[in-house]
Image (tube, rainbow over all chains, first blue to last red; front, side, top):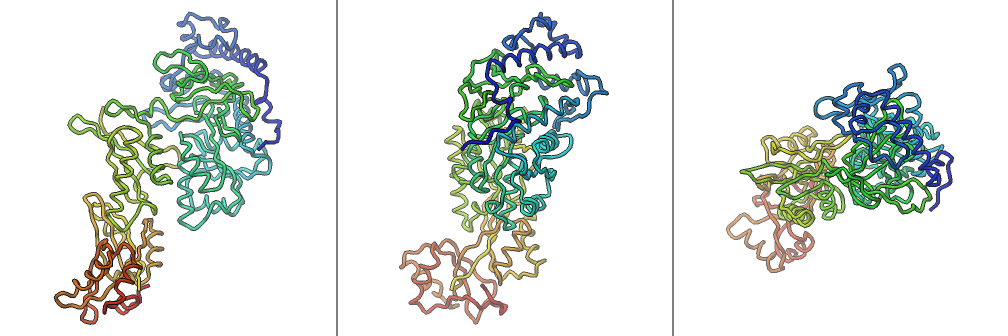
Length: 436
Length: 146
């Protein structure tokens, strides 16, 4: 399959030397800007024994200090702003499950960049003017809603700002308005699929052809399930509030890695333990630097997302590099009895047994010094039998498959439908009750 | 011949059994007979109702996950050895009885039992030669079972 060249995506096809020159030029400017405008970066750069002019090209980036999430909390609310307040046209904030949220700022130039990268993402998903885009990301402080909204309008798509929630209405709109693409979290789309089946709507019979999913990690197995159940292409969009929101990177029609819009967001992979840069192809923590944002530039932000950079050219022809899809985060790793376990592994096991992903939750407890992992699975129509024996057998198969993948014995329990916590934004899969 | 049994999943917690019963009650659906299979963590409430499709719809609309299985309702002569005759015929045909339970009311001076066999069709065939009545449309309350 080939996609028509869309002018909005031209920065994605710039020859590498030209791209590096642009990156170097932008890096010099952003270092100068944060040095002059923010106390935190001025101090950090001084402490590193650098001067802003020591950074001459993009190759010097590894000399710069890291930024971590707590830096944004410590400077709450406006401490990292590098533009005067009267130039700032938008604020967003992260949900902040513990303590203060983090606040991010955009000036006019930044909201333009944001709409541009989202437009480029939508083009790479094969969307164009005339598409009808249902935006089921939450509108509000969360960056997902407004981010996709303005990018969609810039592309010329018809954007329907449904926001999250009221799933029956979402399905009605999808059907009645002839929606061709939807964006939301992958877990919310699974919820839409479940609900549609319950009320007798087959998404496969609708014009919907693309799903744009992000804001939480999702597996290839989940993608296969979604693509089959809805007869759509499911694309990954990557981003994070600290950098700009969604639109840091996006898959192309090859669905083999996420192209980072690296003319605006420079990616590096580091060893999360030593902080040392790793060569392309090696797996480590993704670090991102905003090259062009003005109101709140961020140097070398440690994303906690674990991935690797792909240096091989993509068949789509884009010259901007790809990262592999995010399989997990350095901080969603569960350490149990000395083993590292990721929720994505549990998900893979559940999918292998059922062929469809049931709703689940992982609960960690500690009893007499020993860690226990319980996987609670919501009973759905495929799981429910009238025979206890069949139910117990299924529980045993789930437990065996999980043990096969993670190497640990887990307790599999069954829960009533709709009793496990759901979120129309990001989903909390792990409940750690160990009081570590 | 065969009738449809409607099952729902309930967690083994106080009050959980009430919810499906109340849902059916509000819709005016009478439970003709039921049985609860339980483990320490959860139970499966199996019910025979006059209109299984309506019950399924009402329960699903209320958020329950519903399983429908084909079972046989067999009139068993209410005298010593009555049940043994039924089971003998089934055993001779090599059919496994998954579970069984009784109707709460007697019918025509006979006991009526609900059987869940591995295969309802095989059981129907095995019982064909016996002088047993498979109930498919008469209920104790005079309602139709579908």
